[in-house]
Each structure stands twice: as C-alpha cells, then as structure tokens.
Amino acid sequence: MKKIFIINGHQYYPFAEGKLNRSLVEKAMETFEAKGYEVKTTSMQNEYDADQEIEKHLWADIILLQTPVNWMGLPWSFKKYMDEVYTAGMFGKLCQGDGRSKAAPKKNYGAGGTLTDTKYMLSLTFNAPKEAFDDENEYLFAGRSVDDLLFPQHMNFKFFGMQALPTFACYDVMKNPEITEDFKRFQAHIDQHI
Image 1: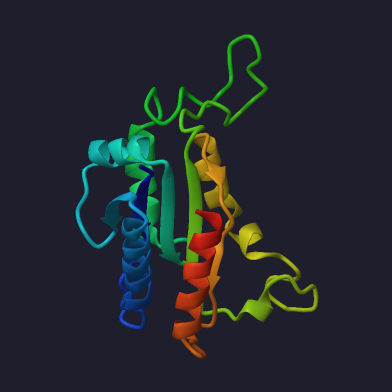
Image 2 (image 1 turned 30 degrees about the horizontal axis):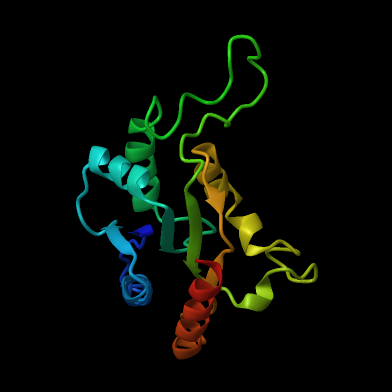
C-alpha cells in the first residue's frame, strides 16, 4: 500500500482564503484513498509538531505539496515550517549532514539526503496566467518555466534525496478561474504520474 503525505502550504490572506488549495487537497485525498493509499495531511493553518512532521516525511512514499505561489515563492508559513521541521531533521533523520566528507569537503554538497526512495510533487496555484511562462517575449518571467521559478523548492526536496514528479499548476485563479477544468486536469495529472 502506497503512503501519501499531503502538505497544504496555503497562508490565509483576505483576498485569498485558501478554498482552492483546500479543495485540491480534498480531491487528492479522495483520489488516493479510492486507490487504496494511506493518506496523512498537514496544513499550515494548524499547529504541528516538528518531530511528528519528520516522521510523516519518513513514512511517506510520496509527498504532495499543495500551495499557492505568493510573491514568486511559497507562503511564509511554509517557509517557517521548513525552517522548523527540516532543520530538526538535518542530522540523521532526513539527511546525514550536507553530503560532503572530510576527504572531499568541496564536493557533493546536498547529497546527504536519506529520503532517496521518496518522490514529491508540487501542485501550485497562480494568479499569473499560463501564458506568462515559457515565452521569451513575456515581460516578467522572460521565457522561464514554473519549475524555474520554484527551483529553490525543488532543491530543498532534492537536498533530502527526494525525486521529483512532474509539477501541476492552476493558473489565473483570481482573474480568470477555470476551476472545473483545473480539477479535471488535476485528476488526470495524478492518474498519470502517481
């Protein structure tokens, strides 16, 4: 039986209450449970214990981070979670230091992760339209992809040895939402990649 750990990284803002991210988490839970997977969750809206969160990471076969992208990155509450949980797991649980050795102190930085059998998937919600990415003529991202924008988060998971599954994104969710279509695409993405 596969084990899925879903993290809801949403941070409440008056203009973004988190309904879409919460609905995507619920849809993922329903989908995985229907497939017979065990599911555990954590939400940035609730309190958590760092040691229990480390255990959820160690338990999981797949970690799904469901989160909005705010100011070109992840919400501060998830950054706080990483600072607390990932720092607590640095020495022996999520990784064995940073991967370097005394014999080669300048090589293999970031290669000490212990979660080498764990996969992860980013599922993101954007105010930006899809067309803002992957187009050199677009002003802000200038040809960069969603994964380029989220490169630091990919590196955080890679630091612990995790392997990436293809990223999913909902675009233009505030000005031109297509929620029904997004749910269909999300379901198809999960069915194809997990």
